[in-house]
Image 1 (spheres, one colour):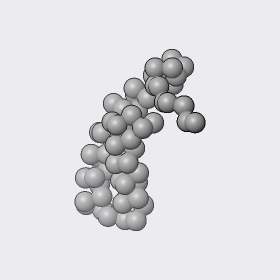
Image 2 (image 1 turned 45 degrees about the vertical axis):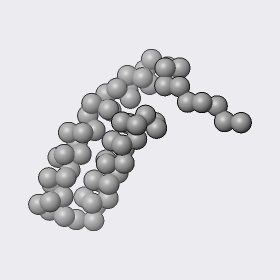
Image 3 (image 1 turned 135 degrees about the vertical axis):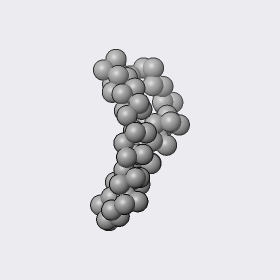
Length: 63
């Protein structure tokens, strides 16, 4: 049986890391999207997709 994930049971330092990451991921994603529009390289597209997936995961509290 799988235990339920409760973010409130995490250590305080990890809660702080999640809160900071949640605040910074959207500006990083927007900047990367603008950069990908002007200079589309394979690395930029992969990095943008990682940022989008990370933003979705933080918003829906998957991680």
